[in-house]
Length: 111
Length: 113
Image (cartoon, rainbow over all chains, first blue to last red; front, side, top):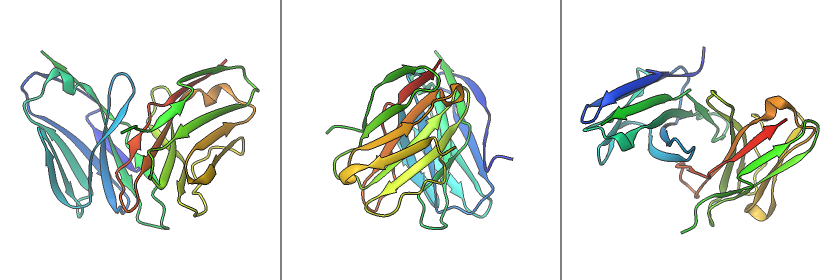
């Protein structure tokens, strides 16, 4: 079982819909990252969080440490949001900054 | 300012050849990471450098893989005696001191024939 599980693997939405992508992990962590990988391959860091909630524009990320679960929400989705969204966790042990990644959620937003 | 840069952007090589991939991190960033993304697979950690500390090499898949970081800046990932399963996109990222957000380069797409 992968240490980081994302759902769904693929998601298709109509423009304007509210999107939720989920991430569950099985290990203790010091932080969780949400990344966006565009069709061309470039990766952008969206959020890094260790508790609570963060918001940036139409994107909201939440984390529940007790339940080992995080969600990424996109409000008023737009075709330009089409990308692969990747969850990654950082272990607090041994001083390493190593990230363990989920397999990603491919989002397609149709106009 | 300039982001993380990687070169070459694409590399095609024959099985058994050695390859070197280069990463130029953002100036002032003390941490540097190498990752690999194989076709249809998720991102995989390879190696992590932090300042002058010993690197975390726990993700390197075999002893054919090595990396160095000179002067705390530029890093080179070397793959010796390449195999077809080494074909992947190799991504580099860097992060500033006391921060964990990582800034990714565009990647090097390696194809081993």
